[in-house]
Image 1 (cartoon, rainbow, N blue to C red):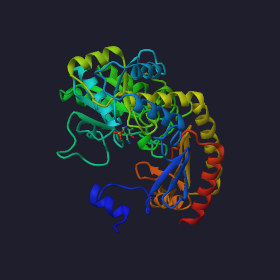
Image 2 (cartoon, helix red, strand yellow):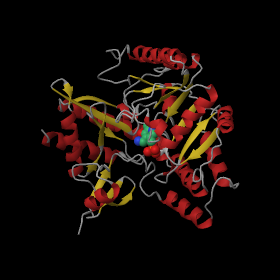
Image 3 (cartoon, protein in one colour):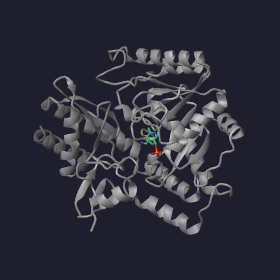
Image 4 (cartoon, protein in one colour):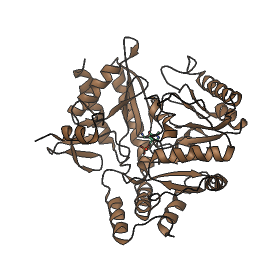
Length: 421
Ligand code: PMP
């Protein structure tokens, strides 16, 4: 009898990745907990998709009710997308009042890039050099992990992503200016090459880059340079959005800027495949005039019902406040831990998106970090790593994570740090 791992490799391909040296064969979830097929319980400190907790009964009920009534596409008029969409855009700066619903973060970013091209008539895109924005052909041009066939295209420019311990320009104090200079240089190059600037696309929390600590206004000079060249600002809120960072609903609010286009995904419907692009009415209109866009599944009544239930649960259960409180508490515990473990070189984060960066012998401790991820898994706590050298333990749990869960996480981390060498 082949194992599930063998069946996966045969059916889904040998490079279909799994987390952990010994992958977790999951069966059931509830809140912050996951159970494997042997009935073992794990504290889930990593899954941001089940934003309001695994299998939240209100989301499950909303999906079942709407699936039992009707599901179809947006060529028919239906209230569900309107009720949800109006509730969602009310969470944004009033200029960002229009919405296009899709099914994945990749699609949302693909649409956002096309919106910027339609608005500007230009093709140049600026992104950061250690990120991931999705898997379509256009968006893959921005990804750091694999060079596209034929190489990166000349309309795409990468600027150095900010970092706490290896800051752009060499110092934390000078990082915003050095980052902006990188963007200014990319703007000049794109103008000289004739592509022009259509957009700067960033995750405002730099989630895939290691979530550096950035001061409000960090992006201002870079944004000025892009806007002066006629380009748009796209904020990829797929990871920081929906209140996870505790201080604000959106990462761009924490940075103190208003983008032209915001893309949303992962946490939006607690696991149901829902994503969206939120933008100004004129941008959506120009996009629709330039491209005849239709998305069969985007915004269907079941997806909209699931997403609306998530929005309501965030409000009713005060999950933004919870993220703020529990995140600050956990970062405090991690800072105490850092005082006892030399390998913890930095503790940072905002709300329920935080972690600890590991260095040893003056270098990012990539192998130690990987060993920690596996050791924690073996001890029943699921997290993962991020950073240019995968040297940072990344914690990003469902937003119902509480102080007891934080105590357990940090206690197990303490034990695991003592166990791995
Ligand atoms: N943007 C960011 C910042 C992401 O982290 C991801 C997924 N990891 C995506 C976009 C792509 O989203 P999806 O997998 O839903 O296409």
